[in-house]
Image (cartoon, rainbow, N blue to C red; front, top):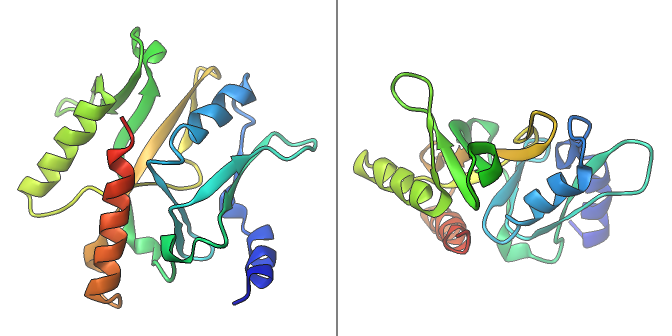
Length: 191
């Protein structure tokens, strides 16, 4: 597929258009998502692709939308034919410190009683990765449409999904290792 054909296909990809309607401060929500461009990949369920290189823009218009714009020339950091069943909800949410009465970024994690606790983002991500590793699994966080949420219409939060590479049986070991290593490398830049 040529770059121009891919660009046309992306124009109709509503999974890359995220509403900002629930936010009082659209700018704050957009900046929050932009903060994670270098550390989290985006999944488009419409085309079944994972994008490691992308930008986040707000087009001019009546509707307050954020648009994820993949870098169409980043062929080695775009993965195709990723089934939706490989993208799982985690129950983890990245929140700004103001939501929990602190500064910085935090990972909100539900505990056994269903409530939850917020831990500093870097420590939280490390703890989750270690927990998955202890179970013989891996934590490969990813964002999808619907993951950007508002706390009391003010603070942006990002719900995390994860890639379950074990269900992608049609992928070669080489491609799976490439996806895993790229996602882990991006995640190391997070905090």
